[in-house]
Length: 155
Image (cartoon, rainbow, N blue to C red; front, side, top):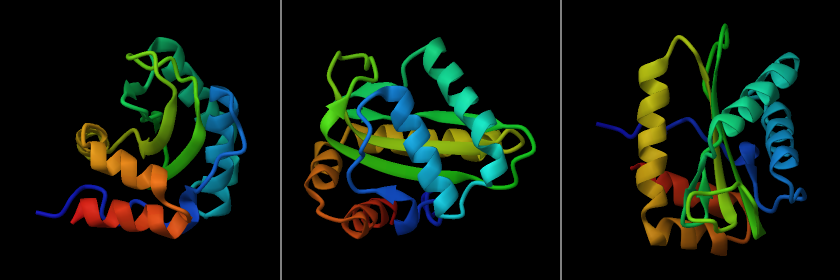
């Protein structure tokens, strides 16, 4: 059975090195990348940003070990959007372990496709526990190399 993330990510929706250092700015930078990559409609940006910020207010999506999974379910959205970003310096996501986050995997899903959303969250959570996954993404020099790590782990 293929991983739920096969086809979810593309090199165009990967930020090799974030410019932003503040959590809310990072969320917005990742959304702008999703729009530029064509995986999220521009008109949805305010709604999705608000949903992501509200999710962070309810509890941090920083899992620990340098990984965060900001995510939201959006009414009326037609397809999933997956965006990956890396920050060498780290971002304060108020992670459960208190550490800065270096790898962010954002998932934006239609609210009508809860099972796929949960399956993808489970997969990313599992990958976050793998020290090699995080290490390889942190060492990648290009978005394409980050994409290769995702593809390898999804197969």
